[in-house]
Length: 231
Ligand code: CTP
Ligand code: MG
Image: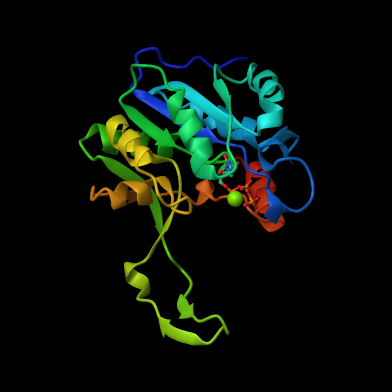
């Protein structure tokens, strides 16, 4: 059954899904690879659509797969599908350009975080609604982190209690994300990084272990296991 989005919702969610998935090994673009019998993107979009304040979903698909992705997602939820770009940032910009007038909160969410709970999407949106311009979900870092040089020699130990691992969805007041993307000069940073460069405060909220990014084959196995236990 196709999910209904909330016509009175105030949130647009951008789902960049145009990456190749090189680190997952040879195969289809990552967003289209199966996880428990369904493409990663289907899992991701189903959870986004289940978040009650979501008004609009825009997916940036691999350019050659736009029609296939439209057909794939039609039974899942009403979504707009646009061709993505060569870098994640270009894919996000393409999706952002397709958001209709209305939603004043924009979330940017990786398709690769396929098991992200709807509750995390709502908590990021709620923090933006409460007045924060930019909001990121984070987890504490559990490993000790060292800075090294090109020869793998240790330069120093980073102060772990001050570190956070950053997830998506990252949430923004719409005008703030638009301004950040308009002046984007660094293709390697995440969306919150672009906003930081504008001198705008970025606020953290608690992330979720289930919002792990499926990057390597191990992550796919872990996600399969989590689904089998009810995630
Ligand atoms: N992404 C995108 N457009 C790109 C590159 C990435 O929309 N040109 C999306 C991916 O589809 C993914 C998210 O950005 O949902 C996070 O990127 P990542 O996990 O790095 O995915 P891939 O780029 O597909 O993986 P890899 O880097 O291993 O190729
Ligand atoms: Mg990538």
